Image (cartoon, rainbow, N blue to C red):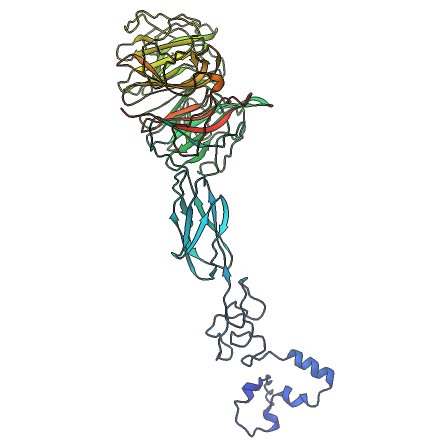
Length: 628
């Protein structure tokens, strides 16, 4: 039996250049089937066969699927000549047909695709900012937004963008983000340049306008992403927020009242952090809407879910471990502690409902059951031992009656106990002035809220004015628990200011009666007072922008700046971030305030200036006093 014939292998079509490499003298059967049959094929079949033939490379004018030269390269890079059959050429990798998968085009001339290098600027207020690409190409940026370098770079090229020249007028320190990398197959859009207006004191006894547009009233704020600083972030306009300065020099802001010209009044419970070194705000916690209800949790138990409810005019302290403390405000007497290291609030004590009466206990004796009554706008200090002190405010006394208070309290963060130190346990108590300049155990300021207060370098507490027409200045010494009436009227006389000559101290000089001014003690022990709502040199009652300093060693007041007539107290902004002797805020009251490590006063928010009937501000100012 004859063995079965083996099937004849099917011949493939060879391109002409492949056949040309074979030896001459082949017979008809040596040619491929297609080639032998083409001469006998009908025209339709011939056309079909030609459509089914694979494309040949290497002979210019065709489509290159192998990466060799002479056609369009589907890999996106230009092929080189001399490629071998079935492989990739030295010009780049290849794929099986189609257009460029990289999104870039190439030409038969071998030019690779190029892409733009974009930069997005934010926070720029100065002029003269210049960036440089790869130490060669310069880009002048004159406004916030996205700009492109003139030079484009090829795919695979490295890029590095840096600041060549920082802006001036005002001086800013811009920083590039995501400034280096490798160009891919699209425009580079991730590079940023942030330009904070960082305050650098170049002059003294001057104001500097630091932030928010001068026309931004009733601003809703830009919260951004919780926990993420951004040049675009800005707290909403507000008045009477709580504030702290931490050991790192950061400013903290909580809550406050938001007044809209048309919608009325609302309250907030958002917590913010501001870094003066970067000029960046961070929304830390709380709601980005108004009138949020508090979440108390369990007394003494920290939780990231806990948060005080919306309120304004609270007392605030910061302890030796950098934790933030908040008491009352908005008719509450709850005490809270915020721990920045883990982002938790702790309800420490007091009631979780509004309107609670005070529990005074025995004067001078600490007890777990003691607690001040609910109140708003008290004065608050921290002594040299880290204990917290509270005076007066508008709230509820021991029998639940509401009104102005003059009670003095001490709280120990280590024991969590309150001590009623002095003053009355009922509302409306009159002051006992004694002899001017002489401390006495019987002395005590009269009942009030919204007084200006500060702590000097010796640990003594200072109190000026307050609601009710006061213009008196007091000093309290915690080491002996005695008040001293230092200056001003010893009655609620709604006294007008006696300004004298600007910049000149005199025994007759005195600020007018006022409430909600801002106060701090400088390194030389002088007491500063700015603004508030009170009485100018003409006896008119209005918001003020006058700045005063009291020198304890002489007993004299000096009118430093601002207007002596409230109706003329318009703001002069100057250039943002640029200190100038001509700069001055407009009338200011109920703002949040901080004192930085260089003893500068910072103000955020307030009630409106002269040209606005009602509303809240989001402006940021800093004052640099002279160092004597």
